Structure formats: structure tokens, C-alpha cells
Image: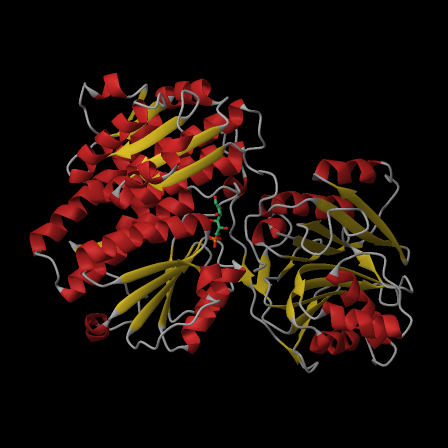
Length: 611
Ligand code: F6R
């Protein structure tokens, strides 16, 4: 999604802004732009496509030496990716310039009113309406910040704005509602951005703006104002993001680095929540009695987080004996929910900024549910609506394709299921002890998979030319199949569909021929294994090429499957944690082989802040 960055101070502004935008690239974008204020005039540079195109524009203007500026990467929502629609946008009188992350929902009404007043628009965006609205407010307002505040009162929706005005060359205004915005203080100046990485290296202390707050940045410092214009102080926190978190650390891509971080993440989650043989969750604010009284759990999420939720449902129902419903957040918000007390609603989101999940959580809160949020960003908007928060602590995930956050979400669901089970006493003590022991072995088993990836690489080379892929499994690993297929399609652009294996014969089997690879995730130790073998035989009889991801050491598998990707033996219920890794790697190696932009796949955004 869009990202904004702004700087005012004594350093080379263009370079700081460009580098800041580079760190936000992971959010996904399709055009970019900068506005630089130099000697009281604005220079606006824009480019469609990658930031390298913007860099070329900057290189044509090397004489620029601004001390204030704002930058933007745009993920098109209103209007195609084009120079006209790229930010920054400028007012009709050329005096105010603005970048924006979010959506002004009532922009059509505002545009009609402004057009009636004689203002003209040269883009399809909601953002241009915002800057022209501020221009109009400046006619009646006593100051530039007041004009921004007046305009904000008229906007509905989400925005993080950075705004400059020619008559105020020593002031950069930052303002927000329903979209994240941070401001920071550094030695060389003040900075604002939509995410922490953009501030790293320039800022030592920072603060998150709250909704309807403004920060007025000058080269010397920043002043905070509330919606009424009253000045207040805001505590700043130390910026502790390490350079290591922002670097690939020797890996070719962030995705591969993040896949390799998974064992350590699982280990640290176990250390955090498993204390002397008991699961402890102090930030889960439901008493044992309230947990006992729960009649239902609802889980809402999107994309990869939704797949983690599907594993969560399986494990909680299996162990803690509570009915669980999992629903795409985008569907949850548009249907009627019968009244039901004693519900726990779990919102799962890596970024904590996914608009659909935020809306679903808000709705559940209105219905009186206890809202538990599982997120990798405890500083995110989603957390504001939570009664309880479980932080995933997976570290900054930069690759657009979620990998380590998925594993952290899975792990959190296992821990949560064990906690609910422990509190509700629905399993024997030794069952829980055994599962805990098995979980503790998982990091080493993950390391085993990551230590030798040659068979996955060979498989990727062999199948990289496939046009389509089918992933199947049964039971808890249907989610693994869904997640594996999602990973493959999002970074390699190969069409990959996943099904419960039993569904194959109800339609998808018509697709099978010698060109179609069918990947099965099959783990021994349950009736699913034999059933999956039968389903694989059925696929083989239609000449499909078969790949297995399995912990079975059965020699006969070699005669049925063309390729076998071996994983260590774990109880089936925990196997999503290990089985997923070869699938992440398969997608990675295939995308790489096809020359795709692995970390920044086309059309995708890291945090999807529109519904
Ligand atoms: C897939 C992916 C997306 C996200 C989805 C939800 O690799 O990254 O499918 O999982 O957009 O994002 P969060 O978890 O941030 O709510």
C-alpha cells in the first residue's frame, strides 16, 4: 500500500526521502514521487513503476538542494498508476502540496462542492481533492495548521498526510486518522513516515501520532496539536530498529532470510509462553471462568493469516473442545451475526493494518465479543480495538509474501490452544505434556529442513515451466496446501489451486493430465494418510505428475510419487509447522528460477489498508 515520508532539516532532503521510500518499498506500489521545497518554490518529480525510475528523474535534477520535502509511493486505488495520479498533489494556486496514504471516502461529494466553487482537478485521485480542500480552507483559516484541521473535519475515511505550504517554508505538517503515521527527531532534522524503517538511521526518538492529531515539524523540533488546535506534549520513544532487521544479512532475498529466521522465532515464542511446563499468557485478559464459559470462538483474517486461522480452528477444536468458526474478514463484515454471548473473537493480522480485519474486529466489539488480536505489529491500528493482544514477535517482515509471520501465527495458535485446554481441563495432563515436548523439538526439525534444500531446489527446477499446479491435503494440512498454493501463485504467478484431497474427484480431477503437477501433503499416523494415498493413485491414473511432502519413510512412496520432499517426523497435528517450509522454499526457488521479483511481486501490497 502507499507509503509517505517527509523531512525538514539541514541534510540533503532528496536523498533522505528517496532512501526512506526505498525502505517502504516492501509495502507494494506502482508509482512514486517527491516534492522538494527549495528557495520557496516546489519541485515535483514523479515516475510510474519502480523507484529506480524516480531516481532517474532525480538524476536529471542534480542541482536540487532542498531542506524540506515529502515523498510517496502509491498503490493505485482511485485511478490507474500514471504520472497524473502519482503523488504529491498540488493545489490549484500551486501553494500547497501534499502526499497521502489512505482513502478519503467522501471525496466525490467534496470534489463536486469544490468544482462548483471553480476549482479544477487534473487527476482521478481522492488525494487531489484533499489538497484542494485545504487550499479552500486557507481562505478562511488564520493559519496553515488551522486550514488542515478544518479540512480534516470534512474528510471521512483514512489518511496519513504530509503537507507543505509555500507561505510557511519552515513548517511540514503531518496529520492522520485511521492510517499509521510517525514523527521523529534526529540530529539533522525532523522526519515523518508511515512506518518505522523509513526513520531508521536519521532519527533517534519518535512517536506515533494518534487519530486527529497534527505534528508541526520545523528544522528545530516538533509541536503537537489536537483537533481543536491545542498544543500538547507527547512522549517520544527510542528508535531501536537494528540495521540487521533492514538488511538481507547475506541472503539473496528478504523472503529467504525470513524463511531461515523461522526456527529462532518458534524457539523464542516457546521460551516466552512455556514456563515450567505450563502455558502462561498474562496478556490474554480472560479469566479461567470466562474461558470455561466460552460458547464459541470466531476467527477473522485475510490471506495467509486466514490460513493460519484455519489451522487454529482445527487445533482448538481438537484440544480445547470449543466450536470455532473461521471467516475471511471481508465476508464477516457484510453478513448478519445471530446474537450469541460469551464469544471470543480473534483477529489475526501480520501488519495489524488490514482494513477488512480492522472492520471485522470493530463489528465484533460492537456486538460485545472479547477481542483478542494476534499481530506482528503491536504498534498497529488493529491493536487499538483489542481487549487482549498476543504479539507474534517475528520481527519486521519485509518480503511481501508472508512466511515467518505465518509460522509465528501457527505457533501462537498452538500455544493458545494449549492454554485454553489447560484452563478448561479438556485433556489429560500427559497429553498436554507430550504435545509441549513435541513442540519444543520443532525448531531443530525446522533447522534440519533448512540445512539441506537441494531436493526442493531440484523440484523447483523441474516444475518451473508448469502453467498450473494443484495442492491437496486432508485434515489440518488442508491449510498447508492452501498456503503453499497461495505462496506459489503470488510470487511465481503460476496458477496454483488447493483443495481438500477428497474434493479432487468432485470436479478438479477433470484438469488432470501429464502436464499437471499435483502436490500432496501427507503425514502418517492418521486415516488421512491412507486416504491421501488413494487420492494420489486416482491422480496418477490420470497421468498427473505427483509430488509428496511427507514425513513417511515408506519406500513405496517412490513408485507412486515422481518427487518426494521429506520432512522430519512430528505428530500430524503439529505438522503444518514443518510441512509448510518445503512449500515456502518451492515457491521461492520457482519464482527465482522464473526471474520474478521475489520480494516485491506485482500488484501486491504488504499491508492492505483498503476494503
Ligand atoms: C500472502 C500475504 C497476504 C496477507 C494478507 C493479510 O503472502 O502476505 O495474503 O497475509 O494480506 O495481511 P495481514 O496478515 O497483514 O492482515
